[in-house]
Length: 143
Image 1 (cartoon, rainbow, N blue to C red):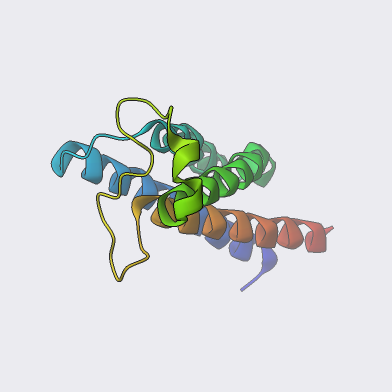
Image 2 (spheres, rainbow, N blue to C red):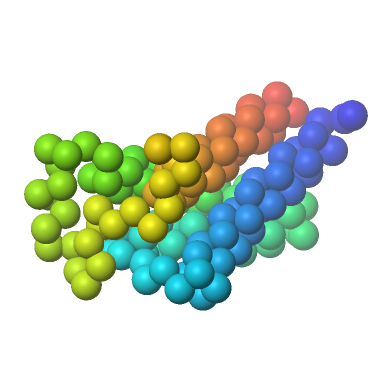
């Protein structure tokens, strides 16, 4: 596989991960009826544009158009991590006091005792960030 195809494959994988995360968040809110808290909305604000950013970069085959994606996913990692810590670390529960109508400590899902919605979002942001770093290495190695 040549470098161009590897780059296209990476950008497709990033786009697919962002799309899965978007559909997952819509599933939880629209089908399951879970009302997103304030930090969930921030994570959505960071995730949803990634579908468009990486989709356009993939269609136009212009990887440099995807640069904003690494910034959004990097910020998303921090927001998701903070949200997850608020949910799981009792000492931080008080920091979520003014989090809006739905407390940010609310755990609609808790699979295996540690997989919550912010955990899933964090994994998605990490996958996107790491794949984008690999993409940057691919683009850099091409020059």
